[in-house]
Image 1 (cartoon, rainbow, N blue to C red):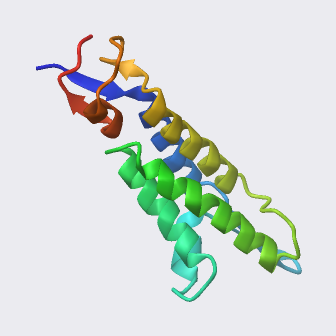
Image 2: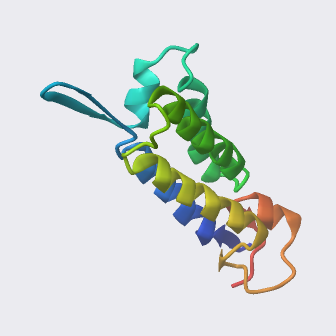
Length: 142
């Protein structure tokens, strides 16, 4: 039994991991600045913060994307929520860190891979539902 591998989904998930560890927020006061990645944001805020839910959605979405392209749905909801929460706290400014924008690119790739899976075992069309819903699925033909 061969295995189909949705490489487009994997690329999106890897970009999501890179995004998690990239700068999302830069906090500064006078001569002191602190670049915060998504894990820092998650650890610094409590569950009542506007940033908590978007951080959780993005983190879980990236992990799920390694299993299924459906993880992109959580990411594509979490990133705009994060950007809008940031804009509401920063008087309409957008985040200057690259993390949220990388996460958006990764989420789009993961979702596109749901519609147009690309990779090992996807040369045959049409692609079955199981092969679309799983990043690694059995029964592929290379």
